[in-house]
Image 1: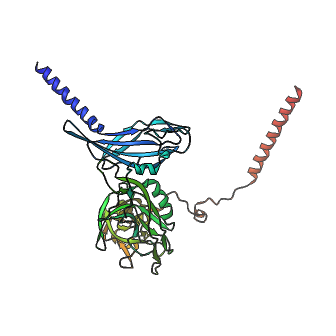
Image 2: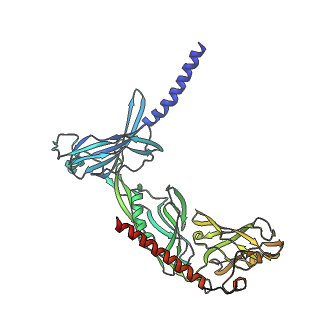
Image 3: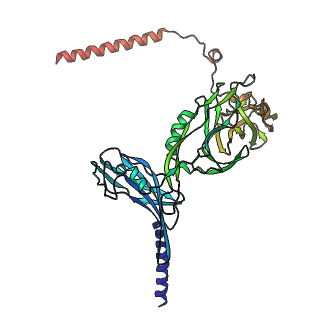
Length: 483
């Protein structure tokens, strides 16, 4: 008996966990329009939420052969046996561009933070349908505005928005190679009363960046994936900033960096002049916001022998060595790590002094770049192996030097090693000569046999070989002709 009770309780709990998410998902539905419509009729996708408000939802899918006409909202409240239930819907209207059968593949939309799936369907668009005036479901195209007005259709008004599209740069003047951060943002004032939302942002942004990105700069893109509002203050006025694009640019020459004005189309809703609890209280419309053009001046670096090759930024040195007590002929690892703020990718390896005291191998290189808070920082590491050949005490600053230009101090600076190594053992300078190296032509004169030899012996040998070859050819010819 106890086993049956436990089995029933387990089954009930398991079923509850399975059914509860399903019931929650059922509060929000995606409802697709009919399978067939006329060319003069509209087709819809509806998001419906029961007993909760629609706080957020994704963009509606695009459908080949149909174009979006706009969204409308609906709400309904009912009281049955003293219990209040409500529903709210957002309807996207599509109009066909031609006749034919069009496919809406399965898709997902995130509504109020939940992922809602739809199986999609095939939509057949036939010839125009003649709709009688008494038909309550007549086409949008057959509506008479005068009749709608007489029947009490909601009147919508355009509310003046307090928002703008802004392109800003962290600096107005830079040196060649000095980074500056560019941000494209949509700013909404705290006292704005016009409802708006983004429209096909990914598609618009790709076109905007084609115009915006300068060709004479290296780009480090911050790759904004989630657009979230951030409260800021501009000249004492509060705004919510939505960063659309952000990147740090490094000019490659002294040509001025010019950003043209760009436009962003937004969905802006008209609001009902006389709002009602049951009716539609806003109507979708579009408005394009334009940014202002911007120019950043680029200055040449001050005179310096390495002016054309130095990196520009604020850098420091972090170095590591396996041991400072060395023996001649034994290799040791040494890391020369440059870190700071600047174009990490453009950092070249340090200049190394070459002599007969150390043998340096080509370094392995690795880098890490961080893009956050409007800054590009990182580290570039050069890992060397070196072999000492002469005993003594040596300062590695005499071998490792890296020159850069600091735009803050407007001066050139040099990163030098602070390591001091003590080398013991015997000198190995002469061991680098290979034991099998016979030297040049003149070096081999002393080891070559200078005894005179007669060349007649060689002549008789050549003559004997030739006679033997002729005899063989004659014998072969005789045998062939005899047969």
